[in-house]
Length: 183
Image 1 (cartoon, one colour):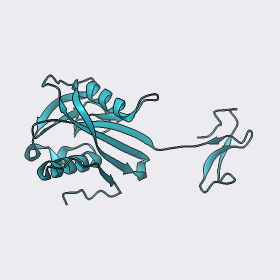
Image 2 (spheres, one colour; image 1 turned 30 degrees about the horizontal axis):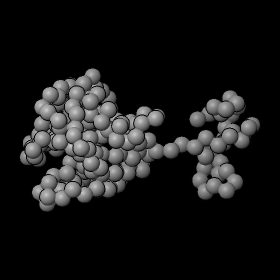
Image 3 (cartoon, rainbow, N blue to C red; image 1 turned 60 degrees about the vertical axis):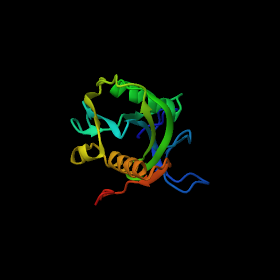
Image 4 (tube, rainbow, N blue to C red; image 1 turned 45 degrees about the horizontal axis):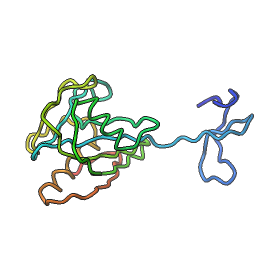
């Protein structure tokens, strides 16, 4: 950030009085421009012991597999965002969604929130951001072709809970470099 969105004058990085970290502060009007983590909301759509994955038709990570998820929009709840992304990316609907996990990725300023639920039916298809969508059992997950480490972690916890007959809310942090839950 180089210029103030309030008055258009140059900004500087400095610690505002009463704060504890550097912020973008306008040198003219003293407006503080906070930068906060981005929230990504998504779903773990399930049928029996299978999970619906989408193969990405967009960058980053074009052609790799992911859960339907994306950035929340202003004015929507995390659940609304997750269900919207599931519909947009996989044309899928889930019944009775339950919070599944919250995962922090501090080095890229992101927080992922996943909900799990049984798909209402098998009428799913690729949305505009997906090349294809398909159901996978744990043994058939394309583990080496997952788009992001957080997807690997969310799936790992999902299948672990499935085996234990648990329905817990998981949390985790993705650090650099990612070693994975299966290493």
